[in-house]
Length: 127
Image (cartoon, rainbow, N blue to C red; front, side):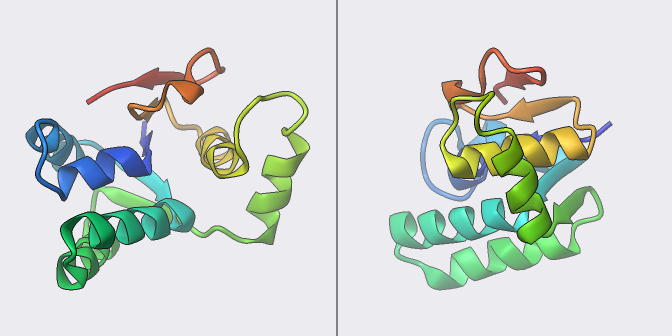
């Protein structure tokens, strides 16, 4: 069963910080799911933090070619599925899109350092 990986984990995996190794190992070892919004957020943050667009670009290409990563398109249907849940969950819209991605794709957990994903039907875990 796949696990949804939030953009913070990807950013930590591709920038210099104490969490880099754990995040990188997780991305390489697990069957993971992301959506294109997570990929966009990750690209933007990695490029900003590292000031290296080439690194951010290679990270994005790696995600498209990796056999263990499924990328779900962020489209109007996903957006409106997330909106349907907006009254039930107190999440900002981007996190609600990510949570909805996990729900619709039967992810076993959400891997994130973001505590906003706590106390939901899908358990949040850290790398």
